[in-house]
Structures are given as structure tokens and as C-alpha cells.
Amino acid sequence: MTNTEFLDRYELLPKGSHVLCALSGGRDSVYLMYRLLEWAEERQLTISAAHFNHHLRGAESDRDEKFVAALCETLRVPLFVGGSDVRMWAETCGQGIEETARALRYDFLEHTRQQIGADVIATAHHADDLAETMLFQMARGSGTRGLSGIPPRRGHIVRPLLLTARSEINDWLQSHEITYVEDSTNALTDCSRNKIRHQVMPVLEEINPQFVRHAAQSALLLREDDEYLQKQADLFMQNHPPEQGIDGKALSALEWPVASRVVRMVWGNGLTAGHVQHILDLCDRSELAYAHVPGAVVRYDAGRLWTETNKMPLTEIVLAGERGEATTGGFQIRWKVEHNIQEIHNSLNTFCVKCESIESTVRVTAKQDGDRVKLAGGSCTKKLKQLFQERKLTQPQRASVPVFRDEQGIAAVYGFGIAQRCVPEIGDTVIYIQCENIRENGG
Image (cartoon, rainbow, N blue to C red; front, side, top):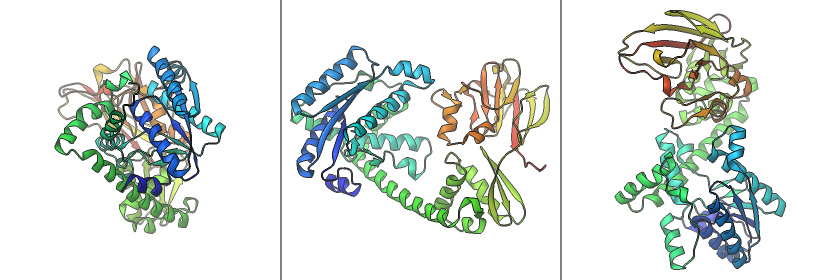
């Protein structure tokens, strides 16, 4: 696919449109600006630029702003500048700096787009970014949607460079003797994406110099597959409204790629493949049956799947003594202390909690404001609110998730896993906890 075919296929730069270029002053965005000016002649485009100063790198941030202002003056492109104290906002909102910076930046870009009447906002994501995202999602075990990486267009955001490799950008800028500013944080390797960029990508490009181009093309093909499958799921939903109960036979007759999308559309995008299969297994039953997944109770009754509202409150219980059993919020919880453990079983609803990591006793509660946890296998500490948002749980669903905690904080979360600090080793003494969803009417 040529770049022109790519632009036209996804309607990224329609003729006569007003394009707002997100211009940081870095290599990629400077290249994007020059390419947009070329396309402007071919497509009768109006070009404006926007720069957001994050005020995270002191004098370097101010340098970037001055560079962008000088560049736009030279190119005779209208420039709109904004900025904010990202670090302060991150602390206020209890979010990560990168997450906060992105949110503030895109809010500014959208506000500017509306203010000047631009049709789209162009960002400088390129083929290497697409390949890196694809690898990152692969490491997380994503399906076609995750593996398709960065979308060419999302709302008013367009990415005209997704088929352009970083090497092409470098060569073009060098051959035209065009300067740009360098963000010193790009060289850091303390986050997963930068590790992929600086350590993984070079190896793959050594194996196949065309890796970036091929990965970008693969991502676009996967996106087309995903969009087709999603259309099939949308069509099923149009004919089977959830409020009328989902026809179990009709759902089970669908192929897995479509059926799994239907299930997640009805009961939450955050469901794992195991959760989806648990719900689909109900369709093979001949009697009343239930599936309990994070934030939802699915009832199979007379051939149809219904969502039940859990009216049982999640009240606090304490896991006291060497062993015990209790019920709260529709969950049956069993626990026992095991010494010199030789097999460790941790899952989404079974936890082996290292006793030495526990301060005082383990309690089961609903979520609490400010809850944070670093889950085993996770790369960073996250707010529980953020984890729930990533699973797209509703507020009632969030309130029904059992959280296991001690005086130090969260030890485990039902449906999400155990905290890294509580993971035991062979030979440790542990509290073995099982958390099982049960039917409201005594099942």
C-alpha cells in the first residue's frame, strides 16, 4: 500500500480540510509538519500547528517551545501554544506523569481544534511506533484488536505517518538539512516501551531489515480483520438486544471470535478469555445456571442469558484463625494457613499469600478511595480505580469486587490477582485463600 493509498483509504487528509499539526519540535513532528505542507499543495489543505509545554524538563521544555515558534514563523504556519504544570496535576489527580501529560496534551489539542475550526489533528506516530505497540501488546497476550496497534484514525485524531519508518524520517531530514530538538528522556530505558525500542527492535531489524514495514502492514491487516469481526458482533447485537435476554443457542452458534466480542460488549471489555468461556459454557446447560465474572452475575434461564443485579452487599470480614469460611456480597471465601508450602497456586480467584508479608490480619472489603496495588507480573503500581477503568467496570461492578487487604494495603483483588509484595516462595508459610462467586439464592 502506497502512502497516498493509505491516506485515502482511511480518509486521513480529505481534500480541502483544515489540519492542526501536533508539533513538539522533535524529529517526528518536524518531519510531519514538512510533509503536511507538501500534501497541502496536493490536497488544498490549510495547515496550523499546536505546541503543548509540559514544563517537565525545565529549560529544555522552554527551549522546545522557542524552537517551535521560530520554525512556524519561518514556515508561515499559525501556531497555538499551551502548557500546564503536569507534575502538579499528576500529584493532585493521583495519576502517573505520563498518563497525565497525555491527557492534558490531548485536551489542549482538541480545545484548539474546536477554537480554530480545524477538521483533524495530525500526530506524528510512525511505523516504528506501530511495530513497538504491536510487540508490547503481544507481550501482554492481546488479541487482534491489541495487535493491530495504533489506529490510523480515531475521532478527530489522524496519523498520516503510520507507514513511514523512523529510518525514512531520519534520512529525509538529514538530506534536507532540517534541524529539530531532541527530548533527553527518549534515551531512557526504564519503561517497557523504551526497552522495546532500544533493545528489542534493533535485534528484529538485524534479523530482517524490513521488519518495521512488515509489522506495520501486518498491524493494518489485523485491524481490518478486527473491524470485520466487530461488525459481525454488532449485527448480532442489533438482532439480539441484551434487555430481551441473549438467545443462548444463537450465541453458541457463533464462531469464537464473534461470540467473544458479543460477550464482552454485554458484560465488559475487561473480561479474560476464561471469563468469556465461562459465560459461553452456560449455553450448553439445560437447567438454570449461573456464571459469575468480575462485576457481573450472568443467569442462564429458559434458553436465554440475563444480567442479574447483585443486591447482596459486600460487608467486611476478617480472615482470622488457622482456617475458616465466610460469605459476603455473594462470594464464599475459604482460607487456611499452610506451612512449608511446596506448590504455589495463584490465579484470579485463588491466592497464596505469604504470611511474612502480612501486617496484622487479612480483611475482605470493597474498594476504598486511594487504593493502589502492584500486581504480580505488573510493571508498576496502579490505582485500583485505574485497573477498574481498564476493565471498563461500571460503578456497581466496582463496588462488588472483593479486595483482600492488611494494614499495609492491598494483598489481592478478586478477578485481578495477587499483589507482588505478597507472592511467596517454596517453603514459605502462606494463607491459602479461595474466593468463589455463589448464586444469590443459595447455590
